[in-house]
Image 1 (cartoon, rainbow, N blue to C red):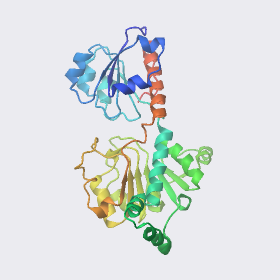
Image 2: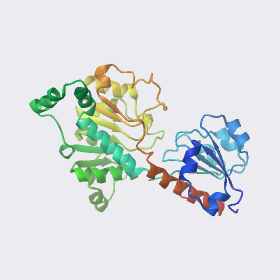
Image 3: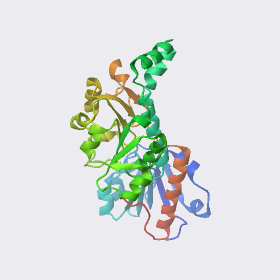
Image 4: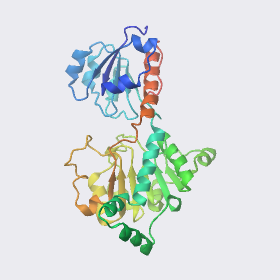
Length: 332
């Protein structure tokens, strides 16, 4: 197949495609139909019935009905790393590749992870509130009296999952002098562990001994809601919990219970289940004593400008490979 005339259905923000596509003879030859998320399968089919590629926002559903309706479809490409909203089973049955932008935002999410860790250790929520209320010196003297203000270098940090993002996070933590551990079903070799300054622990040991537990896993049937009451109960009393992966990994009520009891000191969350997050989300609508223990960020860890540029370079490389009749990269 030649590049000319190849059709791409883009489900997401039109400006993402326009801003991050490098103009070349090939990209200029491809016909792109950009439509927002939230339309029905029939609406997408009507707008681009002969699409050969779908490029979808990482949180955009790509249902089986849409996949089956596109007789010329060859590849579905996530605009990000996540691909759990794509009906992979139907795609496989139809002989359609499903790809993602693995590693595109690893360094960006790692930065966000460390930001949340530091924000929890220094309790920036209470600190900001104290200064605004004219209580700066009282807050400072409280830390000095208790002697409980921590540094990352004093912490054991446990990374649950050790893919591209986990490895980038370990590199940053090494610069702070933190003791870093990870859980992975297949541990790295000794040489790689030295490279990242991290050692493998069994899940239960990691939870029981680490001062900070940070999630770095995709959503699968095995990982969905894995952070339940039993998970939090296994954590070291007074430890901190960070999630920059996916909200679907966490049982919200179990996390609230752990925060209420004080077994988990605080939580730093860049992502929540049921996004986009409404004002009545259970984690947002907590009483002040729980609210003060949660540091939110608006799921921005992986959406830096350089991340999108890297991701779209991967997407267009794979579209070009499809146009040449070749197998794309990062097939899931």
